[in-house]
Length: 327
Ligand SMILES: [Zn+2]
Image 1 (cartoon, helix red, strand yellow):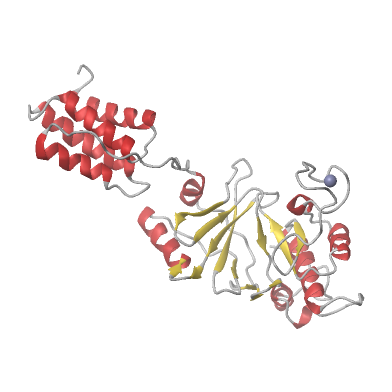
Image 2 (tube, helix red, strand yellow; image 1 turned 90 degrees about the vertical axis):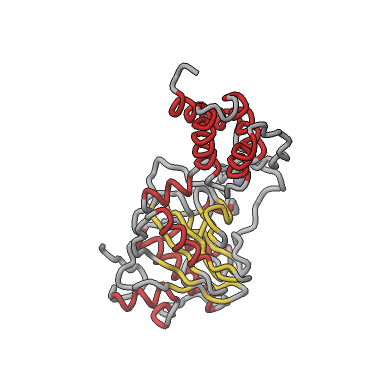
């Protein structure tokens, strides 16, 4: 990777690191007065992120919010068409002049945000929280292990609260939704329309720093299976209905219904298929009527809020697999 450092005389690895973490080398050529060191560090970090990696950035306040006030009243729909600044992440740019202009307006900025989902990297962030007894790093490891996903080394940012951000390059044709805690506890996804706080930024809790190898500031492509998990359809938020059905097939069918009712999120459809196959095997052996098996499982699926069409397809394919197409 070619590193072009726009601010420092020498573009060495050490300089890159110092710039990314807001170290001493970033405190050069400070011509602006009346601003804090944090402001200048944030500007340096933003220029480096744009210059070295092509990231599109905006200035952030100490509360990690876009630092330029909107020129419009609340409820407007302008995304910058008016030509003014103050449209949050829609202002994000990798043009150094534009970045300096934004920081000139945002004199109280102490950080910068990197827009996700934009060329050239179509950045995706995994925000791994480690607080309140939840360890997002451990949860991500567990998730990867359970799906057999090899997670390559990529750029990692340490957050001031003890967590980490893992940066991934996404494909340009996939829109990754922003989600909190859906992949695993303590694991949030920052995708299209979101932003990540860049290294060298300061928030109320402290400094964001580069935690991965500063010699290899390469954003790795997101593993395909991880991307699939990030973009999987959300399970419906509608509340689960109480199971009111009667399993008329005796204890065996009741047990199979229980398998579906107890299924953890993400395994409901798999469990339903397994239970349906078992139920149809027993029904085929004459233990209870086929229709009883069908109805009990359909009601169990509804009780765990599986979409009706999905449940019908799953039960139907189990039925065909076990009993053939003619039943
Ligand atoms: Zn506007």
